[in-house]
View (cartoon, rainbow, N blue to C red):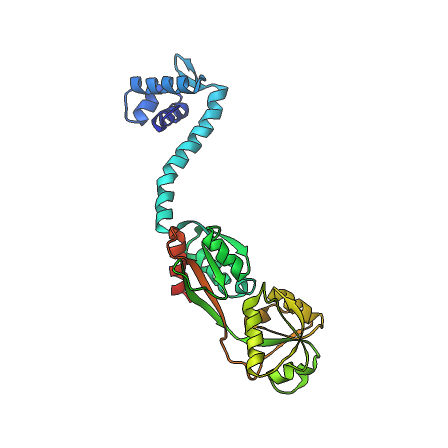
Length: 295
């Protein structure tokens, strides 16, 4: 319907109010510019200028078209720069999956790194449990996830993003808080234990069950819950105690206290970032490089 040259010519004539002056500004002669304007008017089917002996003035339709022509020319000028930024990974969009507790550790660091080094990259965040993130990555619904465990797969790449330790969350005034020493698993096993759903939170379920199993203990599990922040809310309400990642202690509820457990090893809780090996998002490559360099 029209070309960018025709739009540039139209804007110049509108701003100068005179075809001759606009032609001088565009470093061309007047007749070709006049023909451009005429072809533009024929192409869009409206009269843009009222011609007078001393120059031209915009018609009402021409005034509206001027705003849109300027916008189109701005977008056309910006498009190559934006394309170069996207190709370099400094602009674009990254869809990130994350678990609830990872928002307190790794995700916050990623957001800060992106804001500092990749301000034109939009992060779209999706809270999901691990298995939902893996399904979403394979389906192309997110580009990267922060997950608890990574399956063996040639399709996926991953790296360790964070390690954590288990601590005990207990209501204030609970007998385990008055031992005068860090509790042991054997102490905990005498009390009601809030634990995790074996289907929705299988990673933490297996972690807790294995810890007690190694100690040859069979605690009394009273609740099976899928999200750590909900586990903390239930403990805060006084329904038992729970083993949670130390990073979850940042969620300070009024009736909660956190205790080290004497016979639990450190760094047993892992968090991995995972992405498709053959992804085609330069912004994701840039973010992964930045966060690895700024640990």
